[in-house]
Length: 535
Ligand code: DQQ
Image 1 (tube, protein in one colour):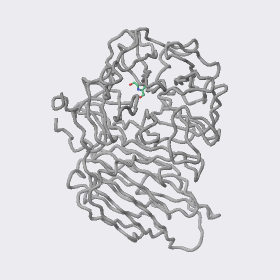
Image 2 (cartoon, rainbow, N blue to C red; image 1 turned 180 degrees about the vertical axis):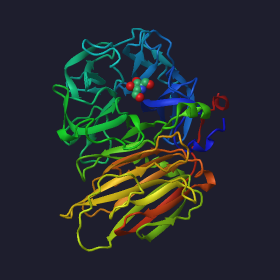
Image 3 (tube, rainbow, N blue to C red; image 1 turned 60 degrees about the horizontal axis):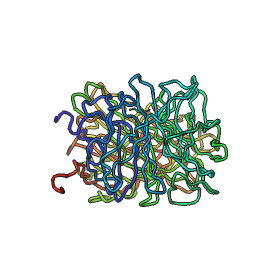
Image 4 (cartoon, rainbow, N blue to C red; image 1 turned 60 degrees about the vertical axis):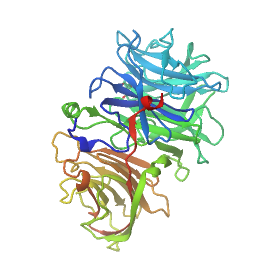
């Protein structure tokens, strides 16, 4: 099906065809990274959900494997929904997932590999005593889903947490187990936040406050904080907060109650949902996957025959410069796709100007950009335009300025990634990081929004971002990954050889001096596993 084929990505993971949503049960095993994902084998819209399966040795090149689990039992006949993997100290792999039963009750089920000596983990056995958990008293039968990776507490028992809600309060239940068959519901909630609604795909993991390595899920010691993430069903946004986990009573407390889960930081300020991390024992890092949802119509998805993309896996660390956010950065393996690069040094972009960057075709790029701002007026006047405004066309004294990607020569289509500054009369500067999809496509039936957020800039730092461009996906990381915005765009003109990149400055009161390094990126190899050539 060649319809909209230019919108397919070249180095992001997506199935050959049909619908995909949440990443499930990621893990590293015997030399292979495994990605499972919510997959409809029959159509490009959600339904009949199975676990698609693919493997990679480097998180970039992927081989599709046969579907790992299908809805074939009374306890998952309405869908093999989201779940997580736990690798036990003896090498066993435990997969816990949500099943939607024959009466659409959400229950938790246990599955394990049929053959642990198979590095591909092709065959999965569903435990004969499933379900292992049903909704507890007081919890709605459709409000109980997406078990996390388990962690072990000081008492030697395993814990998992499962998202739910009571009325409008989003919450996370904790269960203890020793065998993953029998569970004990903890009296305390891990956490709850009024007004946030149903918590889907909860993720809970430790980060080191003083190291550059990721931590395995059970680590808890001085110098460790815990990230709690919930995907809010009401708004379809992934939110997280940083806090402390108290293993004694299995509760978690946010560092800053004003930035609690669901009311503070977002994992990604763009088009992004149902994310999940795993600990990569191969490279001692914590890796984050996220689902990039479509923003076109279902009928367009059906016509093109596929829907959704996964982000490039991101390395996650605690940001010890700010202490208030995580850092997300594309895994280093993406750099193996780099081809030739171009550098642009000290390009001065005056107020109201657009500067083409001549790099040839611009559909697959890894871009680093750094900006210095030079004020044209000396007096300090307040610039009261905060946030991202109506996007890149709204001029203020101090912004917007940045780059235009997935743009054509005439700029009939363009996706600006930019900064916009705000200064008070006292001289305090606040920096906003934004992505404007409103002119990303001339297609009418596409959701096009302005996304963005304030981003912390530490004294002495330059403004900078890194942007990955892949045909119809733009992943943008500001200030080393303190804030991230993923854009799903639908170009019709800025495609293949017609796609360009530009610098722009739409501020009225500043010159911007830009330094850029831009790599062309190769396509990743993403194909069916070549069983016939091997067996
Ligand atoms: N997707 C799954 C659910 C989860 C939701 C079903 C989040 O388990 O809550 O496909 O996108």
